[in-house]
Image (cartoon, rainbow, N blue to C red; front, side, top):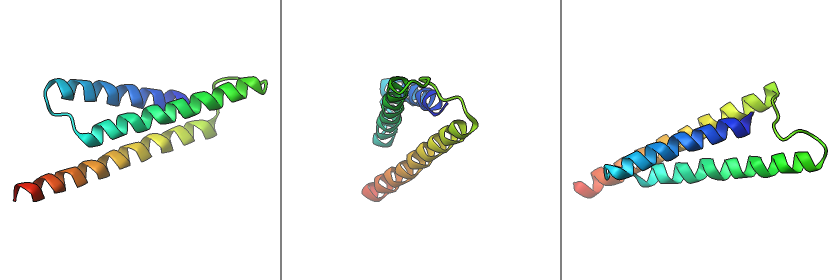
Length: 96
C-alpha cells in the first residue's frame, strides 16, 4: 500500500512540477520533492521484488503498510513545506 501511495504522490508532484515549469514558476523545492517521492517509489519497488523472490506477494495490502504509506506522504509534504518556506525566506532576503 505504501508503494501505491508513494507512486500516486510522485505522479501528482511530477504533474504539478511539469505544469509549473511551463509557466516558469517551478521551484527547487518542488523538484527535490519529486525526486524524493520517486526515490521512495523505487525503494518500495525493490522491496516488492525482494518479497516476490522470497515467495510473498509484490504488494502489501495490510493496515500497517497503509499507515506507513500515509506517514511517508505526510513526511514528504512536510519536507516540501519546509523547503518552500526556506526558499521564500531566501528570496525575500535577497530582494531586500
